[in-house]
Length: 326
Image 1: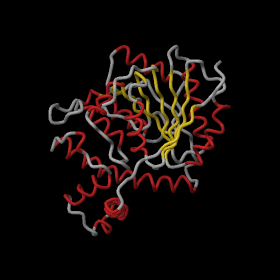
Image 2: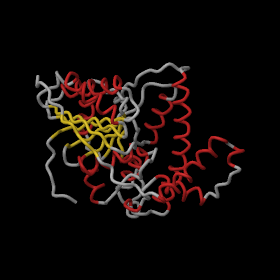
Image 3: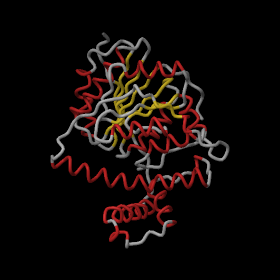
Image 4: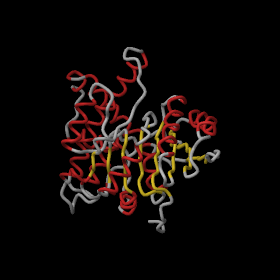
């Protein structure tokens, strides 16, 4: 572990983006800047683009205008990571940005925070410090059901994961990394915190992750029957089926086998392949559920490809936005 550093910022809010439009990601940045203006403490805003150099260039080009009214205590950093993968970007963040802030807020690139987001997070932490926290969704047909489930059972929501700096430091000290290409990265982060970073030594504590009921966000509204919306739904359904396999594998490894968190497979393909072999995956899955069968077959094929060509380094480039301090 590197030499201890003292956090410069109170909050670091980081939007992880890949497939968003420049307009949506630009609005995400603008709303983060607005929320930061209401803070009396230093704030770092990171826009972390993965696998989309064109989007990176476009947001860099527009950043000076968007950031023109950022407060004097706000810094903005825009990075591009070569590998198009959220989980790999989270790993890069953990190991590169721990100790930069007291609280780290990870959001999706299409999540629009509210002006009082950082204030609500700061108030919740001041009243009772936490290792991790999250808000609750307020848009969409399933928002009410998800919100009620989270308030009842806990858990991190992928749209907004809040991690105390202590959590990032302990992840680094335990050599933890999220398996590359994992869809349920929020579920894994929540699980290791609920096990207090050591499943072998600690019982599951569902209350380790704080759910802040008054904390929420907005997302862009898309036409329900637009062709792009239907394609997006199909891809999301495939990712959800992959996530179901991931959840079963993570439960087996952490809750049942109680392995060290450093011992997780490098990729979700290895994680899922082992799980599918244990479940006796069969081509008959195609007949019982074509989507599920396709997902399982795809994961096994990807695992074989990664075995033949291991992951390389995830190179990055960053741009610190120079803006007029207002």
